Amino acid sequence: MYTNFALEAIEQTFSGTADFGKKVSCTISRNGDLIYKTYLEVTLPEITATGGSVAWVPDIGHQLIDNVNLEIGGQEIDKHYGDWLNIWQDLTISPGLKDGFNTMIGNTPALTGPNLTDIPSTELYIPLQFWFCRNAGLALQQQTRNSAVPICA
Image 1 (tube, rainbow, N blue to C red):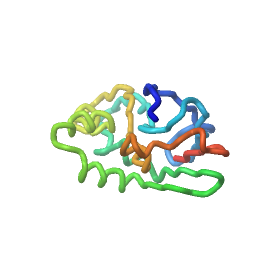
Image 2: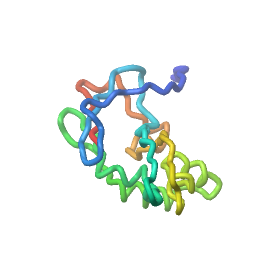
Image 3: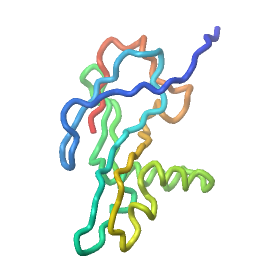
């Protein structure tokens, strides 16, 4: 038996103040039936050079992540590192999608190019690669969960 369903992006809020070197966590609310594609949204601040040039490092979206993990019932189920996300992307993103993906993670000349004097504030959308993010058939069912699902980054 099949049930009609729709996909909707539902923003979740992290507890704590996100900053370089700090750890934050988010408990996924019980909105909807399934958890599928999951992204980490990051706002890079505006940077202005004073007497030189500035640039973010290549693949800044992945470089910001020390690790991100998923817990269910207090048990760590899945964990990824920023370097691993970068390797995963290099191995799996098709050439036709590469430019769009690079824009999502901040790997663009406007952010990483040489001789930049100003970099505007920029939104990044870093795709996470937990098992349920890779295929709709693997989506995590909300109704079968009896406990909160924290994601820590």
